[in-house]
Image 1 (tube, rainbow, N blue to C red):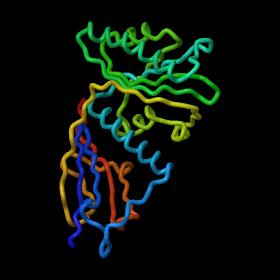
Image 2 (cartoon, helix red, strand yellow):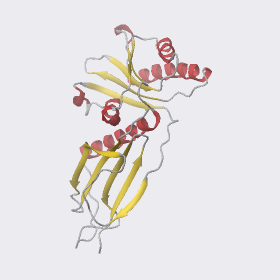
Image 3 (cartoon, rainbow, N blue to C red):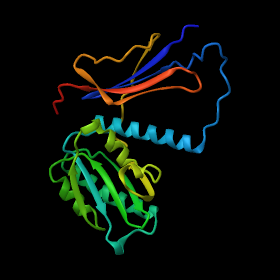
Length: 244
């Protein structure tokens, strides 16, 4: 049986993400399809986080741009919430107020946020939000519990690091030199994503730059599936002319 591979292609304004692996209809040579192996809890957490970061990265590439806002909301010590449910209500209330301001300005608000509490009990919220005129004023007026600070987004790494940062968990926060007790990720629902293109191929070839793009070597990963014995890989091509 000729082995066939599948290529999944996600196309964005400034980049292309490619995932290549053995087509699921084909097994390892000379072997019948075996029983599915049960993943460990650690493997499930890793896969779920990997998928979450990929989805968020795709939303960032599709709906956000350079100089949109990364916002930090903090709590005064005497106003810290007693639990995550209370913090969620605080965030929801603030975002409703901001949404109303965007609507009055004739604009659509898109956002994603991670509520985080450190091991010593300090609460804060990271928010990515599209920037419009006076957005900083709207957000400061809406948040009643502490300080609000702003940074502009930049696309270094094609939003890869930001996707991991905005979805970090107690298990992944050490990547960023942090120690968290609990986190909760949220996002507005008005950020749909396009379905990827699919291709089939039979010969595993070296990756070459596409016309108008270059291979981001930092994103290239290749491994061997321990169940099928075949290679898989994923990588990102960056557009040479990145006009924003």
